Amino acid sequence: MKRKDFHHLVAQGPLLLDAALTPGCGEQECPETWALTHFDAVASALRAFRDAGCDIVRCPTAGANRLRLGPFGLASQTREINRELMRRCRAALGSLPVFGTCSTTGMSIEPFGDLDFEEAVACYGEQAQALAEGGAEGFIVAGMTDIQEARAALIALRELGDFPVIVQMIIGPQGCTSGGTDPLAALVTLQSLGADAVGFNVADATVPIEAIIAQVKPFATVPLCAVPVTADAGPEQYGSAGPSLLRAGANLLGGDHRATAGHMAALGGRIHGSAALPAAKKAISALSSCRNPAFLGPDHPFAIVGERINPTGKKQLQASLREGSLDLVQQFAIEQEQRHATVLDVNMGLSGIDEMAMMLRAVGLLSRLSPLPLCIDTTRPEVVEAALRRYPGRALVNSVSGERERIERTLPLAARYGAMFIVLPLTDAGIPATVRERIAVIDTVMAAAASHGCTVEDIAVDGLVMTISSDPGAARDTLDLISWCSESLHANTIVGLSNVSFGMPERQWINGAFLGMAMGRGLTMAIANPSSDSIMATVQAYNALWGHDAGMLLRRGTFSGGPS
Image (spheres, rainbow, N blue to C red):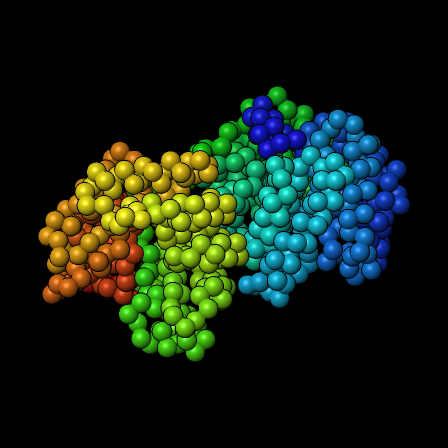
């Protein structure tokens, strides 16, 4: 089955997945080798799910990765076990699609644990390759509580080939995964990285699965999968959950490990023949950290990209980085979060240091430290790739210009890892002199982006602010470009705010006035210092006026920019 075949199948109506099989072995025995030894019982259970109306059945290989098999002394048999189980499942079920199952390694992955990220990707890649050799028609990444581990599995599966992949996250009583990932953040991260469907299981019946599906549906660009909890429910009661989940927005329903063929038959009887809600959107402008999402655009609060984690012109930060210390990076991140930045820009471009190594260290630190998404700010494509591959969310890339190297190397990387990116309207020949010429560069970049599957929702156009001290008409050109992007391209726009006043006196007033003018033209983001009261007061007043910030955080006419 190809990815397009899976999406065509989902478009025909809601699909029923099977329930996870519970092996009959003891704790000291490997479930997968037990399944091979007792395959007649496994085949009987799978055929019962097929006869109950399941549209896709999974091969019971959830724990058959090298790291989970290791304690049983079976790591060297990883390929054989997965390939043989899948081969037998395919033979037992005929034409019914059989998906391979991947699940947790049982270890915590960097930057949250000790397992190297690339080792995790390789672990899942080895298992997936064997399952594909056995005849897997797709994959389910099940039972994930760590978004970074889910990403590692998804990257491995996407690199394997054109197979559909469903990724399921477990949401606990606190409304997030045990790793702290909000359902919306998980959705944004996984669908941008290439998941063909995103699913949610709940830890127990106290967590309302319908509410989770309804919460994420307006932002879903892929089908949603839901797994209702069996608990003590009989088949008819279990089946009654189906229609409400479809109304909430689910496109696929599966069973938990306690669901029987009778439960699945009842569920299938309530959903087959019904209409499922399609994905609400084809693309969205959103970033995510490992914990929270950040939605961008005119229908969302104005976004400040905190500029302080950048060594340019900061002697103290330069000295700290050359000493290998990230103490100031941590300090600046905390201060910018407290000052209500939306995104943290991360630039490690400094002579005398290993930029890639320092970028990866900074990304790891900030992923653990801050709930804010990151903007990866570098001119080196290899640093972009390293950071995007390991970042446990959806990042913003600064930037893709009309320069040949950026289009040929940086743009494909942003597309591959599902990042948003800033479009910078300059070329190898330099900065275009007129607004019309800048628009032509934007059109060129967008055409290249479309060839990689990117849409206008994936970008933010840089207004290319030049200082008015050398060109009195520079601000007007930027405002005209912002207007065109807002009205004709319907794209997010961003500016490096402080550029406009460089070389001028009373810079804060110029910056503030220009920001207000740009907002009026449709500007949605700015790279700025959130420590500026005038800037942040303007932003929060703007958000209040557009209905995005009812509290406004203004007290007695004075901006309250500290921690809320």
